[in-house]
Image (cartoon, rainbow, N blue to C red; front, side, top):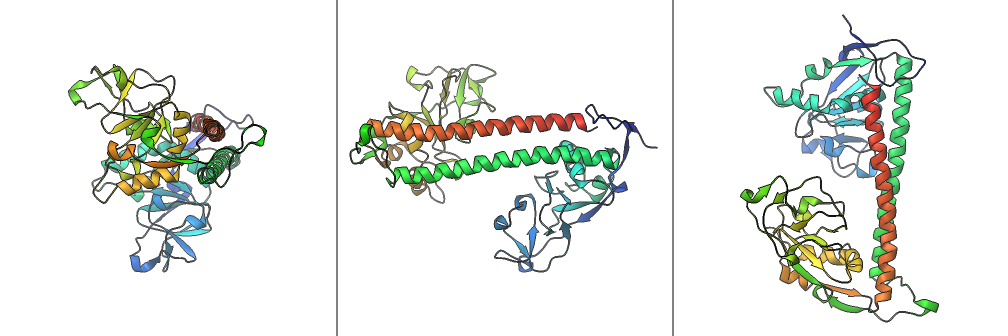
Length: 397
């Protein structure tokens, strides 16, 4: 017997109850099949091969594997679901005409229901998928787990209208993400030209600035080493310790916090415009990443795997530490078994910079303005994602 349900938010013209049914009543499921290295190419081909969620993409230029002997095929409009591994429950709506799928994936195909609607509906059930996968004797989702998933679905016409709403929201999100990516690409290009002196600012009245000079990082300020503490020092509140996880996308994030009851010197306390730098980490890709301490930071210091750069020119140095010239020196200090850079080497990093403070200020102001635009678009994305989340909670049951 079916169970009648209705969503919290609904189009006015629809009044019928939604009907609860199993997924297999309206959709079919295609299991993936593993391909051996000899059965796919990493060069080119006609049919892309998605072995797992890391291969998900709509961009043909980003495809890493191509099936030589395609077996299990997913088609445009199918919903791909990850059924094994740490990404269990990760979904993908297939835009490409067709792809071969590996055993880590399954494809859900509509035989009477909207896969666009299904994609958004299933995106609300990630935790359920993970719980099902963890509870199985062999971790992962079985065909039965998916086919017997209970769904509440409206009439076909209402499905189309709901799907159209989410398609419009997704289109807006995609446009904002493309805009952010283009701004970031523009910034990288401009930085390369500015710091290689391919383009130069001029002073008042068109006066050319003086020639640039080579300096070491230590000529612009000092490094402040981090705090070593033990687990017994941690408390629910107290002195905030900034770590590598607090640097996200070039900004300070306080979503993951640690507090201690340790006393530190005044010098070790975080100050506005300090630049927090990761100098040691288990992951080499995190070494060298940095962010500026904002004015509204709580009472804080930084951990032993971090250093703070402090100087009067940090408005300029913050951009200097985002250039290829900086990261080349970071990578040169890392080796196969070295996951750190020491302070003595970091102090001696060399840069060629404007001799005149006015030119440094012009460069910093220009790049900061671009950063502000990127931040504004990121905030729009966050707001749109929150709006979409609210719709998902209210338009489904």
